[in-house]
Length: 239
Ligand SMILES: [Zn+2]
Image (tube, rainbow, N blue to C red; front, side):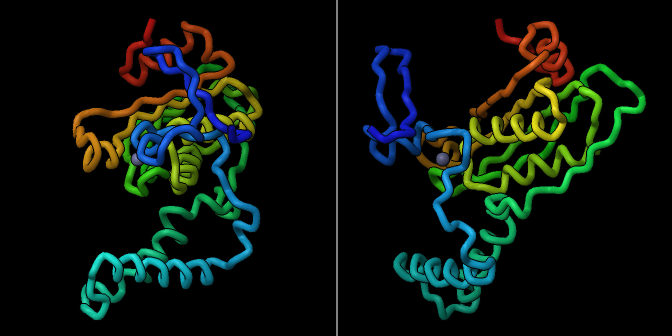
């Protein structure tokens, strides 16, 4: 068994199976991940961005060529470079910790001691199993322990962690844990409500379903606080 293999308790038959026992399609279609940290290899940042773009351009051209596309066509010939730039500089730029937003803390001068909620934060990410988009909304709540951050920084944190190949559960936890670190409090809640193109446009081809994941800690673990948070989001607490 792999050291960090995720153990899954299947509800139906209470068998415990390991992710390493599953085939690649099962891992993808069931959206199983191995941990809260994005799995990075040693030396992930040895290459410069320019070198990564050059390498990805080459390999993406190979993919297109293998698919039978004519790379001398005027419409297609720039695609490998466009995709490479988009991967490194845009949609996967959150893999590089250097791109983490700089977040300044302010004193909570108003002594505002209720929960603060930023809801309907636009979220774009990509599924790490299929490399197609995940999109939806993130909702964040926290109760200040003395420090506050600029509201737009909450959006920037969501964007940063979204710009990685992701699974939604990990994305939710990464945002929650980061906010706890920054705000120096456990009192943080994150809810993500998102659609997965790998579910809607392929595989099971369900265009209606959405996936909701949550992170609650500190005061948000108590039912009254959690219910208040969900009330502001227009969601009902589950029993
Ligand atoms: Zn997927």
